[in-house]
Length: 294
Image 1 (cartoon, helix red, strand yellow):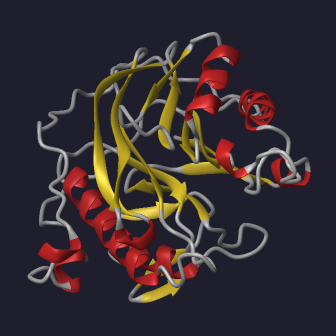
Image 2 (image 1 turned 90 degrees about the vertical axis):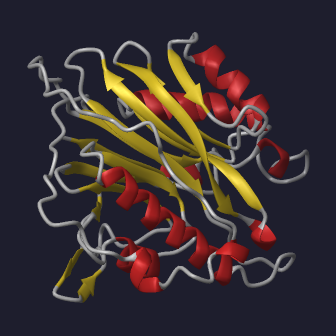
């Protein structure tokens, strides 16, 4: 995939509030209804368009601890080197990374010669956002508490980036919702709660008038798509629609996967790719999801 040409025009300045997200634990959500979570956009809301085209990706790299000797996979460090080559081959500028453990982060920074910035919780790197420092600078970073296995709250990253060319600002949040497994059982209730929090975050950021991007391994297909797109605030890089209460998830060849890229109103996507070669070559057990943002 060719990297898109970035526009050199100066974007309009955006007023960004200091508060990012108010998170509550499941015990405190009794007073929050589904209708509250899906509140429509306020009257007079102004859509903001992206000014700088770039390439974004979402990638579950398959955690280092998941592939010990005998697992059938190469060591996580070896796989991470191959993953970096894939990111660079696709011309990726911003990426949301899941299962990105510390040994893999160390290899990533070595491979890119520290030309990328990485943001995550100080102690837990498994969910991180990375960007090319030649194109963007970090304005602000925070973590949002999202339930993972057994409902345990995990800090997941939210960054406000600024284009060095135009001054354009935009948010990126990266998530990983829990999968069902023999060990943990049915995690549907926690995926639902995580999705509710994603929607509330999208609404909060939307009201600042700054473009918003979500990446992540949501471990949901049609259900996640339909919930996130219900009021038209967010749309998927691989298409689909939700108009008049009728949800139409993406269709083949861009059918719904559990890995997603979403953007707020005013963001356009093109060139969507789900690179399955990362699975067939044993780099990860997930495809690398890539799209142009403009």
